Length: 180
Image 1 (spheres, rainbow, N blue to C red):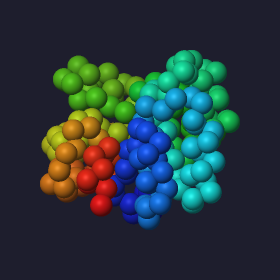
Image 2 (cartoon, one colour):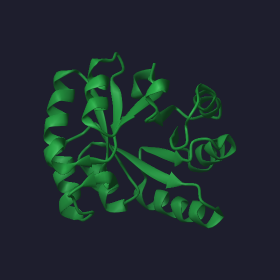
Image 3 (cartoon, rainbow, N blue to C red):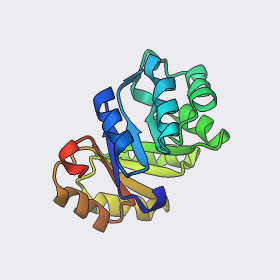
Image 4 (spheres, rainbow, N blue to C red):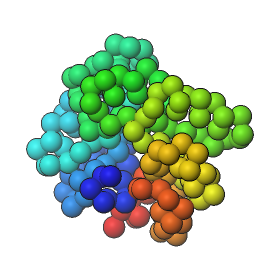
């Protein structure tokens, strides 16, 4: 998965995006981007040989309806779509785009609800947040049988290593000092 890349830099501005375009890593995550920049980012990432994983729920200027899902999956066509929304993930799968379902580990009820959605959507990958809960990374992986990436509150190299040792296939972080 992710060609063995275990760290997925998460960018939320053009400066960070430009930095990632110059790095050796292939895969990266786009957070909190304005709709008007999406096509340009996709074009530049393709030219640089990079693979964009787009957090669809954080695209500014785009609704969360079926048309938004179709626009992202048919027009932008990122390598992967990260979302909490079933319609977005199902549209991604229909368009042969990696569907990454985001799960927030708030409490037992939230986890139960997430499992129900996982059963309905059948995503390709799960992103577990916060990514600093190794016991739950392991638990979610075992209970769903789906590969997990860890994200959220990853602030140290130890956090990355702990998540990977718990079974995460990769870790996302916007902390630039951890990208090196």
